[in-house]
Image (cartoon, rainbow over all chains, first blue to last red; front, side, top):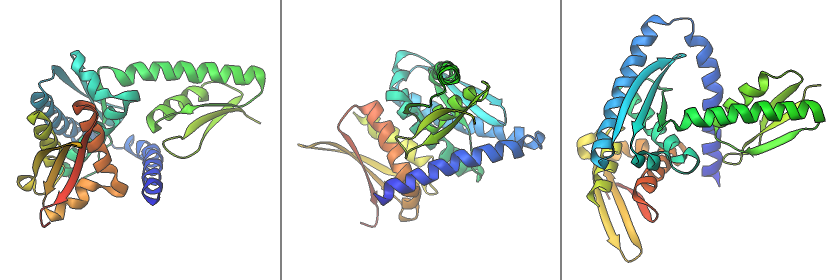
Length: 186
Length: 79
């Protein structure tokens, strides 16, 4: 039980840290970009070797976007295994890849891993969900609780809700059952 | 099934200070398959992670590629 609580704590801290780090990183872009390119290279090597061992077909694409390294793997159907149910394997592999990068650079990585376009597709679905939920809350005046989601998924929904006037959103509950609640703004 | 042990060995080697000390063995019993991860004692904390987070991530990835019933045990080489 205490183990669960600790995991929850670190997840929440991470999401909060991300917001403040993002703000800080916008100011010094130059050297930051070099480090992010290096992060991508290390991550690419780590993941490429994994694909080799598994004999999975996949092309690894590296990018830097909004102050973080983005690593995308696209290719054959085998890659769906690396996404897993509701992206669980993808989140786990991202976590390990960040640790592998940190092991070499000595500093914490916030790199984002996508596999088989899962995040891109999921993000679009969640944006739509956030917007349509926000609009229904505006017209009904009643709060709506969404299904439990990962920190990544919740962030996309919060951002989408924020684009609609007259509503606000917050998260409630404990991981892995933490969920977004959309409510009329007072 | 050695790709399971090989892939786990690779994933663990990338996140520890003593990659040469990492060894993964696939042990099959009547109760199923277990991947035993042996690491340098100094790296035990890294492989387990805060609140067991890293070990959980390793289990999730191995479960996804190896199917149900693949256990992952982290073992300190001193033992």
